[in-house]
Every structure is written in structure tokens, then in C-alpha cells.
Length: 267
Image (spheres, helix red, strand yellow):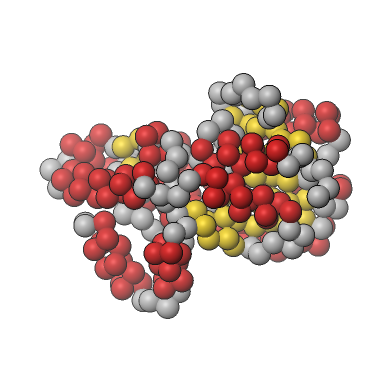
């Protein structure tokens, strides 16, 4: 396969690290963008907060100055905040949307001028099953992923004429550090109405995540997308039950889907 220059955000752990290691092993040049760069012989790390447009611009220009091109962008950086939508603080909302959605936007806007000049490139945005259905107690996480869904669909239409492909990956539950690093709303935990229900649902959420698929499964799917000339717009990567839930959502009414989610999360 032809050697490619690849940028992966959030490449110090989880999906990002597994994907960076796999693509490096296949002979590609991989740049990992993250706030706290790791020390890895096969990955070229650049310190970058995806919420900071100037840091993003500088990181992209660094890659261009060194390599002369960028063939693939994998927007993987993300985080989660659990809690009731009603009680989310402005700071929590800004952090959730700024990291997951605006981080993706910032990278795309920095990379696209170079891909247009090349008349080639591939952008792979990490969405989620939570971007297909609104997950209770993870509402702003879902909102950020729904935003990525709409953004990527529009982007795919706008840039295809320049030889650029945009697509998204929709993971289900995976056993990564995401569970341990989730920030849970103290206001929700302390609330007499929301608190008991949130704690019950959170136990279910964490159990499913901790018993989920391994990051290598997602890394292999992303590698196949990188290698494919014309990848599909959407790629669901999940266990059979979660994959089926995405398919079933297309034929159920909204009220039916809400009832299923309430039953599953015991809320």
C-alpha cells in the first residue's frame, strides 16, 4: 500500500494510540496530536489542545513543513461528562462541545486547505452510537456526536469534488480509559430527584463499557478505511446488539426509542 502521512488526534491512549500504532506498523508516517504527548518511537507526537485554534494551526503547519503533505486526518480526540442535562454547568457544556465537536471542526479547517491543494485526502471523524441516538445522562456527549454526524455529512458533499473523502466511524461500547476518565456531575449525584436514578444508570453504563470490545477492533476498521479508495460515509463498529439497535432506530417511532432507552438504562 502507498505510504501516507496521517494525523491522529487524541493519540496518547485508547482508540487513538491503538490506531496510531497499527498504522505506523503498516509503514505510514503518523503524527499524534494530544495535550500530553507520550514517548513512542513509531509515533511523532506534537503537543496540541484541539480546542485551541492557534495550537491546531501550528501543529498542522509543522506537519506540512516536515512532510509536504497530509493524506489522512483522524479526528479521535474526545471526552465525556455524565449527568443530567438540566444541571450541566456552562463550563461542562463548553468543555464537552469544545473538545468533541469544535476540536473536530478546528482540525478540519486547518487541514482542508492543504488537501484541496493536493486534490486528495481523507478525513475520518469519530462519532459514536451516541451520535445516532440520544443517550440518557450523556446528553451533551450525544449532542457533540450528533453535531459531528451532521457536520461530516455536509463536509462529504462539499469536498468530494476536490478528491477528498470525509466519513465517520460510530463505535459502540469499548473497553478503554474513557470510562475511568469520564467526569460525572456532582450536582446530579447530589440531587434528590436525579441522583439515585443517575447512579443506577451509571452502573449499567460502566459495566457495558468495561466489558466492551478492545480498541484494536476499532483500529483495524480505521486502517481499512485508510486503505480503501472510496469508503462509505458511516461505519458502525459495535457488538451485534448495539449494531442492531442502530438499524432498528431507523424504523421505530421516537417514542418507542425513548421507551427502549429508558428500559435499558433503568431510568
